Length: 198
Image (cartoon, rainbow, N blue to C red; front, side, top):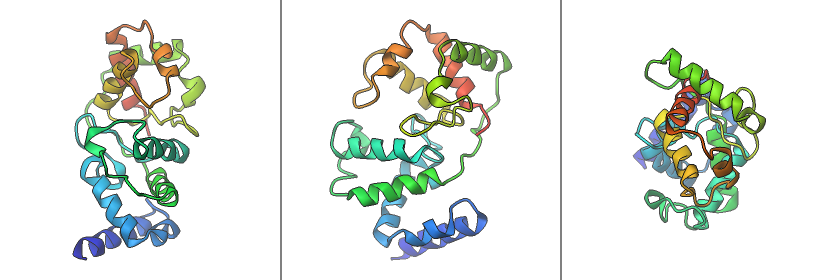
């Protein structure tokens, strides 16, 4: 009960601070608030990850988050650390969770930007036409994830999974989009996306 009270106070504080809408914070049931606290253990408070290779959920498009939560719940995307965590969660609660994370602002990633790697990443991303799906700001849209401000290590890990056909349960078009791109250029793109202003 103390944990739920603490989370309720945190959500109320965030709402007052403008980082989560007041209406949204008030609509979260105690059960859903507890579930979000579980999410925070890995994905960070408000979905801002501080753990290696764990993606930030803050600011991701709502539809993208909904889709991912459903495929994880249904076992179509296997993430061992999340096994069973979404079992029995209703579609309505998944939608509420997606809305919560989508409405949470993205914070800049820690670490210094390397100007040369950033420029190379931008060049490769432009040449690969990444913005045609993820938008020129790389904020993502609908089922396309936000890349701007995502953890660099997670981006690199994820793009390598796509290249190696190991991204089970995710959009297979990405395997073709990254085909033939040298590993150092993939790493440069990860650096570029991570250090774009959220």
